[in-house]
Image (tube, rainbow, N blue to C red; front, top):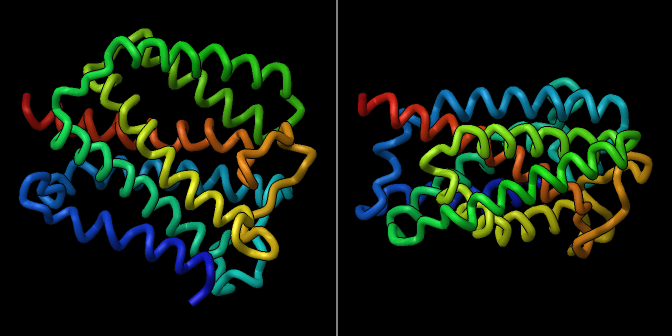
Length: 227
């Protein structure tokens, strides 16, 4: 096993095991998750492959199984299946255990903040590929949400804020918070340079961009099943 593989494994074990909790019974909703999970994973794998080829970021082979699909290590491919799964699981847990927390008003301002800051950073740092792409995608998702006002926008806000804690732990490990060198490295030419300990600031927008489509597609699939 590699460092990166252990990160993926231990990230997945808890949410998967608790998916069979009687109160949440997330396993009963797997059918609503599959389509969005595959679409989101494919989109991010293509983005990841392109940026890896162009050395916007890369991977330290010392911490990998050294099994590659294209230019991406197997662990990275699994990341795009495990992390979205975990986030939807958290989304459902929060709705199940805290149904009174709607956050619609905060949700509106949350998306306004991401729209305004996203377009600012995307334009101001347009030469930084990671900054520009992550912030621009966040801007587009946030604007779509503000225009369409889906019923789950408040729940998404709650989910994103709670997911920040496991995101920071996982991303911190991957970017070298507890290892001599990072498992995943970033080119200084394509990030602003601000760090949350070892985590690039842009990861806040990247995580938003990763979480949004899987939640949107999951909620859409569930809504269609009720019609």
